[in-house]
Amino acid sequence: MMILMLATAMTVAMLIATVFGLHQEAERVRLDDLDRRHRFGKHR
Image (cartoon, rainbow, N blue to C red; front, side, top):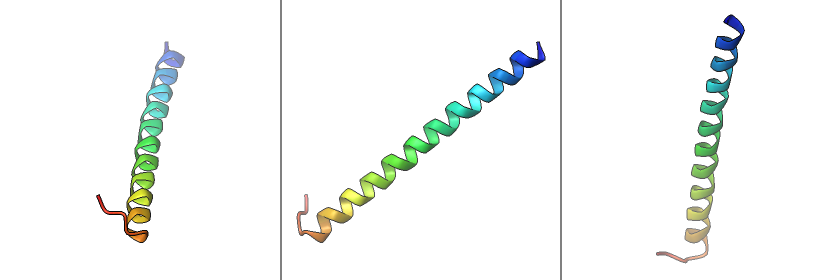
């Protein structure tokens, strides 16, 4: 039973880390795109 709890905890931790990583990557891409638009004078 203990090994199942450990496996569940590790799975949840990896899912949280994946979601956090995807959020960070999306934010970086958004900021890069925003910077690129300002650099080349293309404003919305």
